[in-house]
Image 1 (cartoon, rainbow, N blue to C red):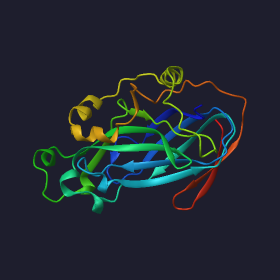
Image 2 (spheres, rainbow, N blue to C red; image 1 turned 60 degrees about the horizontal axis):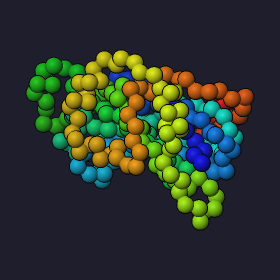
Image 3 (cartoon, rainbow, N blue to C red; image 1 turned 60 degrees about the vertical axis):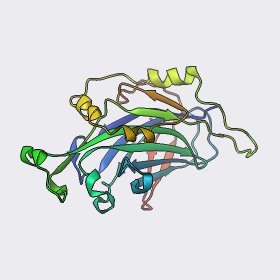
Length: 240
């Protein structure tokens, strides 16, 4: 059976300057005691044409935890501007939150991101060389794409991967989300390059109206989870 459900993602610090850090509040439900660490990655898609320009902005590793509902703040730096193709700096791209267990991806949440100039004149006549100091970033929080992957959750390497989420589990995730009206999201989505959709595709994809409303079933479990960031910093937080 599936052991972890991602139940909520809240995007903070949005809209923001291009150079600003990303801030995602992530909540997940652990359905039973885990025996291995959980890993979450934040990835910035540098180009719709190839994955070669994808950047892993940061990684957090969470110790094995008992059953319960947990949340933490995932803060990651802006992408390295020198690694983004010049023609792909301005416009719509994608940022991905990936959940991993035993080195296998079990969930992916993708958001369209619009990078544009604040100055109307620069919007009309963008400079040949991007001026990153004048670029802003707007994440379409009202149109996340949630993808689940069948993986082997057990320690036995001979076990076959479990099938995709059941209708009951998918409904459980959907019930945790409530739609809200987000200004300008339609404008962002309407500008996206269709080739960006390749970053969302897999076995089971569900589009939710919004992930920013928490409505999960709480448990009596209280536990401390240790989060190790990619830079080596360690901090602790408690169950939600």
